[in-house]
Image (cartoon, rainbow, N blue to C red):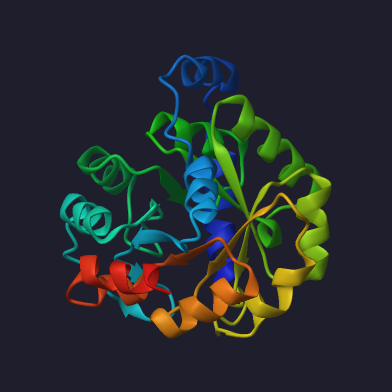
Length: 261
């Protein structure tokens, strides 16, 4: 049976295979850019103050739930998130499945001073460099979507061009793979990428298994302060929240409520 993840990855790998751009000059261009805003540094600094950091996501739709906020204004949304006390932003740039775009990322980042994660299905070196060139401060690397060589090489490339790499995992085996490639920023996605169902106990279960020094992020299935408080108590430094914020009607207040946890 073909899953959501199968379809999404097949589309992204097909696009990557058709991309004939030379990598080296793009890497040079990325390295020459102004320094990034420090995505991991911002999360770690928030944790040191005792606050739960919120990575607030600009998200128009999802494959499983359809339209969430198709008319979303990335700049206005980012401004509201910042006003509510968000530490960082996450912006979906996948168009076919999530309705996002690099333009959304650019508008959101320009509207505020927060570091921004490019949220996408990164499968190639060009994807990583593109994240830097479009203005991102961090890139998402999904362990389930990459083999060991790909994961290691893309983490290294991200650092080479000045990006932080958020390595997303789902279980102990993927955590071991993330640690093996030197990941120091790890997200536990509570959403199963095969079924897209959420297991709200997954992140709590995984938290004590993460090594010291890893900035811990809980992703998906976080609907309000109660969820955030449980994840903070479990040892997470940050939560990444999209759907609950974009449908809230008051993104600033929704972010502030999560921070209060």
